Length: 355
Ligand SMILES: *Cc1c(COP(=O)(O)O)cnc(C)c1O
Image (cartoon, rainbow, N blue to C red; front, side, top):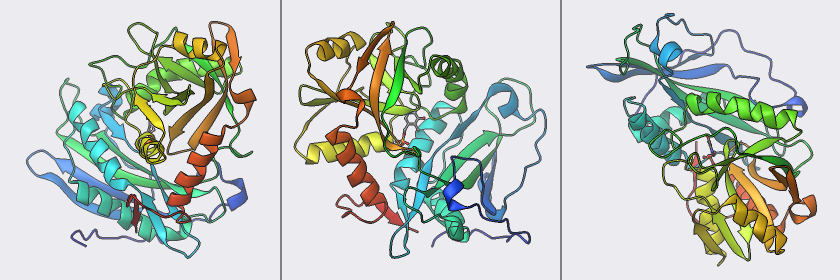
């Protein structure tokens, strides 16, 4: 290993949660990774320390102007006890693309992945082994220079925290009900839609609350200019299977380039299916439904891998997709992708990285 991060072990180990009660993101492990950035010095002092609150100056710029970013990936334990990450190099690459947009200094991708491996190794006893569970990894960066002027911070913290998580859907791959949002927008070209930042999430909460109040689990975002083209489902990428063509929004600055999305596109092409990264209007989705041509809709993301959509509601018109049941393609994608992540399926594309 090129990097050797000093480790301070906790003297006060926590009690691990019962694997049957794991939810998403409410339990954290014993340790965390932390590294500082100082202008003139670069990133320095990467280290592993006991998980604990961090002292922050109230003037730290992240509190005022939201200069920050985050990532999300998972560590899995295989049947023979190996620890695997799924395409962590892609998270490193995406971090730097986000950082450039947010005026945050970039990080050496090799250091980034080594830091993830190092902290996961220290807390490997926290990786749950029950089917459907995993260790969620949350790298993030915050601007922490105490300064109220508006410009990029000269100091940052890069941290990695870990959280054992349960299956995203307790009842298995249950199809979701999705509300098509035509009031609020998530992103426009030239904005920050492609960057993984808290600001995009804060701005989306209102719409999510509205969808929940109406009895829907998530929103389908339309493009921010014409409110016509389908873009993302909540915080995941959206796929539509119409007339044997699998369609997903193109990477043109407004959608988040999901790693699951990219993996799904690879698999579908490999299976000989027609996959198109192109714009499609919500009108065309409904027209395809009327003509009986839409067979499946699903969302992709690290948290749930594949999440089938059972119902869409746009301007009070509800349509049921695939009789509200999971489609064959969604099921196959889920089985193969999660199989690769868990070491049950052959890793043809070298996506898996052992810790
Ligand atoms: C993280 C994220 C995704 C999914 O990306 P994955 O790399 O597949 O987890 C999709 N959309 C948004 C807005 C996201 O933040």
